[in-house]
Structures are given as structure tokens and as C-alpha cells.
Length: 252
Length: 251
Image (cartoon, rainbow over all chains, first blue to last red; front, side, top):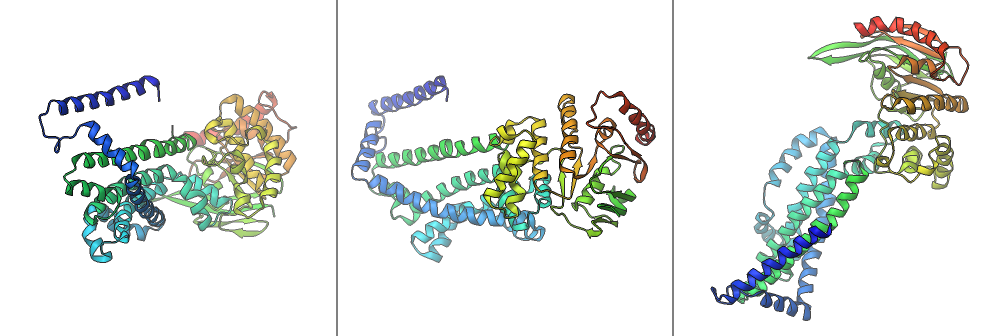
């Protein structure tokens, strides 16, 4: 990042904090509705001190990690099948499009009925919320592969199985990585949403506790943490991978 | 009886819902170690013929024989060099060149040994760890040729591999291609729309007609090598071939 860009960003956030502090000092709203930045920072500090914040982050990320791994594995297999076998595309493909329009949170009642208030239920919500994004992007990626890659590989003796691992997945990777990114976004929303409703451990749970205790600064503190993790994963992890993939695959 | 034989190859394409005859009985007999060039007007089906030979497309009639055995699928005995190279951007130069060997289960040690030899032949050794986006078009085609040679195919099929190159790079590769052919003694079928290229490379040049294509005429090019682009004697061959080709292009 250029230093001038960084300076602008820092300036912007400093300004927000100043305005926030100013509004608080003006005493328009009571403190239990509108906390000061200091209250929120204190709340974060408590969370760090007794490690409850890290425990919450760890729990949410673990659920997300398991769910997203399942979604990625399932999405890759399903997407490749849809792209390679027309019948699968015409049948399962249409269903996938329909299922993708269901927000992950809408799976929560079904998850509770099937799995009870368990970790498995939350992981189910995460996985099902992300799997179709991975599927559709993988499908699009494989469909868009330069046909001469496949012909060259077949010509050099690649069998269908070798074709999948050595050509289809790497050639479609620029699309697949978009699928992972979308899948992550759905999974992240899904895990927080499910934790709010299931209410045990995790960041969503801490949000709910904040609400129950009327502790508005905790609610805002947790929201900031959720945002920070989102920025970190989207803006750092995925951006790095995407930059590398785009350059190497010659797409920029 | 030759190394590679095509017997009465016919091919139809569908155009506006109607069958369009593209190849109308192509009979070619390529001897072992021959360098056969095919020229023809664009859209005449010369590339299609090459793809059928490679097994990438099926003929509607006729057959391809390799060492008198009919072939009807792709196989590492007939390796194709594609017009745009079709290099895999996610692999570096060495891994691209070794791809076919890896697929065949050749050990890493053996793969390196073989790829080193061809990387050296194509003057790519210093680019072994480069990725395709870092290479010029000419370099990419060198990699594509190395990748094909590594497979040690019986027949090398080349589909306008130099069409996208600038003239200087092309002239250089045309000379190198002759040296490679002399060194490896490969049987090569080379499709091009460039008559000068065909005359420089070929031991024999086949002229395809406008579609439905048949072989209109063939020319033996008995001339010393390496042939260079500036050689005026080659122009005589070019003129004769162009005289056959020109009416076809106008159709």
C-alpha cells in the first residue's frame, strides 16, 4: 500500500473516533445506549485479559474452519461433476441454483431439528451456506478452461482422473478461489448468525450475552472484532492468494 | 507403407444446421523421418486433418495408421504442438516440459535428466523456473516444442506453431527447427498457411484445396540444409507452390 493511501485511511478512522467521542461527550444519548470509544476499548481489554475473547474467536473460527473445509471439498467435487457430466448439470445443477438462493441463516431451524443445539448443527449451517458458492464457481471455472489445455494433456496421455487433479482444478483455480472467497463470506455470516440463535460459545454467543446483559459496549466490541477478522481474511489472506494466482495465470 | 498413413479421411462439419464437407478423402503416406508440410487456404481443414491424426477429432470416414496399426484415439506416440502453445500457466517451464513424463509415472530423477536434455536443446535452461507469463511468445513456443520432444513421439504434429511470432523470432526458430529435425530424426507433419515457412522446413509440401479439401498437388523440396529465409533459390519453390495455392485462396 502506498504511504499516502495509508495516511488517508488512518486519518479517516481517527476522524471517526473523534466524532464518536464528540457525540458521546455531547451527552445526547445515555451511556447504556451509546457507549464511548473508551468503554468499547475497555470491554475489549477485559475480553483479552480473561481470554474470553480469544476463546470466542477460536470457537467461531474452528466451527467455520470445519464447515468451510466440508463445503470446499463438496463444492469442488460437485462443481467438477456438473461441468464434466451434462446430465448431472441438468439435474443437480438446477437444484444447486435454487438452494444457493437460501440464506444460510434460513437453514438454522432445520439444523436445530436435525442435530439439536450442537456444534454439528452450527457446522451444518456453515457448510450448507458455503457449499453452493464453491460449487457454482468451480463449475464456471471448469467450463471456461481453454480447451487446448485439456487436449494437450489428453494428447500427452492424461487419463480422466489425472486430468482432474493436474489440469481441471489448477486451470479453473482463478474461478475456484473466487468460490472460496464467496464461500468464506457466506460461512462467516452463517457461523455468527447460527451462534446467535444456538447461543453457546463463539462470537455470536458473546454478542447475545452482551444484549442480555444490556452491555452495549460489549456488543459493539464484538462487532468490531467480527469486522476486523473479516477485513483480515478478505483483504489480506484472499487478496494475497488472488494477486499471486492472477499474475501467474497471466490474467493481468 | 509408411510410418504414418492416412487413408481416405473424410470430415463433415455442421454449418447452419447443414452438413458441410471439409475433408474429401485425404490420402497421405509419410515416411519415417520425413518432414511433411501442409499448406492450404484458411478454413480448408488442414488443422482439422492434423487434429484427426492426433486423435483429437474423429473422421467421418477413413482411417489413420501408425506403423500399419489403425489409431483412433490420442496417444503419446503422436504429440501435437498447438498454435498458441497451450502451456500450463500454473506450472513453471521445467514442470511444463516434464508434464507428460510425470503423468506416465516417470521418476523425478529420470524426468529431470530427460528435461535437462531438451531444455538445453531449446536453449531454455536458464528459464527452467520461469512461469509462462514471464516468457515472450517465441520462448513459449520453444517450451511447447520441448514439451512435445520430451515425449519422444513417433510423429510430431505441429499446428501453425510459428503463426503468432514476429518475423525475426520466426526466422530463428525456422532454422532451429531444421537442426532439431536433423538431430532427432523425428517424423514431422507441419501445418502452416505460410508457403515460405513450408519451403524452408519441408522435405515435401502438400497443397490442400479449398473445402471440401483434397490434396491438389505435392512438391518434393530437395535442397541443402539448413535453409535460410534469404535464400533466393527457395523462392523458385515458393512461386510454384503459390501458383497452385492462389486459385484456392480466391475461392
